[in-house]
Length: 605
Image 1 (cartoon, rainbow, N blue to C red):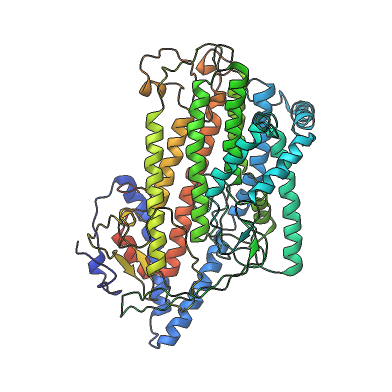
Image 2: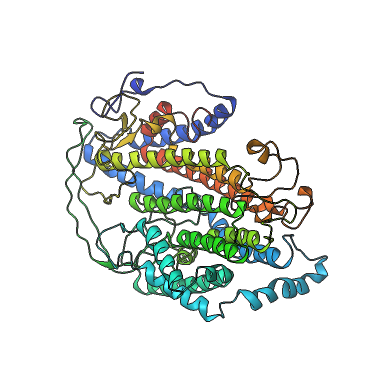
């Protein structure tokens, strides 16, 4: 294929961007569905653009088309709202249920023996343990919560721009503060572990109170808090990653996702036309009002890592020994916490697609505002079970003694790092491309200033790995004057960032079940027992109370559940992106799909 760059690409020259690839049977079947959507989008574009010669009329019709497309997408995504509500409330109930199964029923699923016993089961087996042990009645929980809210603001009391640049550094800062508090004995790190379920309840109550205040303020002032691009997947992270559906756009008087306080940011970008094809230098004028920075999104993952440190400290305090599973889960916790903090930072940098500004969205985002994400504390249940079942010999299941001879889960960690590299590189490429080429053909663009994920500033100075072998990336230019990146990783598939996330999701699944069944044989062929010693985040449930791996499937439940949910989330995000852009760019998107035929997995799908 000839090199097609921003300097020589003609929007109407479709022959220069045709790229033939061999498709697998699975990929061909998916492409058939995609072509149906693409052909419909092409017909819509032809009907709108055909017969209109006046340039002003074209711009007006195009603007109306985009507004209509947003309304159509919003209408199509309405069925996801019940799933959105189920995910929010279901995650809360699931956390309490798994905590009860772990702490009071030896890692077994519990359920009423008959329908007639449902009331007594609900009262005695579920509600009673919650009221006795999970309520934030201990004063320690209250002041720990207040302290966390306090130091989450220490990163940057006044944020002068959007987004906040302190998000990543808070991870290191909070670890340092935990160390100081532990050394001074003001807050020993082991106390975090002892009160983790009360912390969950405390943060939940605080989030609901804040949601009520925010909703009241929103109704009273009638000001939009969230970016109104209705492409929210409704069942998970806006970026397709692991976690709640949280993004970092800052629009309006109050940003429910990251900060509270008056903030306004505007930037002016020059226009570019299809004739010039060379983007002019970026000049921007911005007006920013200082706002007070409240707990940022990454607090939940800071808390998760701190609780992991607490488990390690508690085990060493009790047994003067750190077992292999606990050490293994520390590695995994650090990897995923570091990734998630950068994921949310990147989501904040690039702007996110948020759904309707209704009560459910406010509730969902408010839970993260205090300091926590529900998923970290669900994983913490497994870490607690690892600790609770450690014997004086360092055994975590009463049968097999864990020794230093157990191998490190190399394969899952390597796969995770590869996925992380793909995700980070692809998003960084897109950010710089958006800075230099993404104009949408208008004089005003709400693209925000970006924070680098990698230490490179411009496309020419950054290891772009251009398949075009030039410093100018290959692009598809649309008829509105904007560009679609079609080079480097984005030439391999249209959602290469989601490909990295998908690899990370399933590598974490392997890491979570490391030590169980046949997977352990990949790393340690000398092990003959069917009882898994465990390692990773979720193996606290693995045969913890049993002598046979077939006696319970409880240990597979959470890693498999979240791997499947996150995969569904990623696929939903990919479909929503395709639907949105096929309507926005019409024929230009069809041309881009012909050039880059694979959507999620290169050479497969």
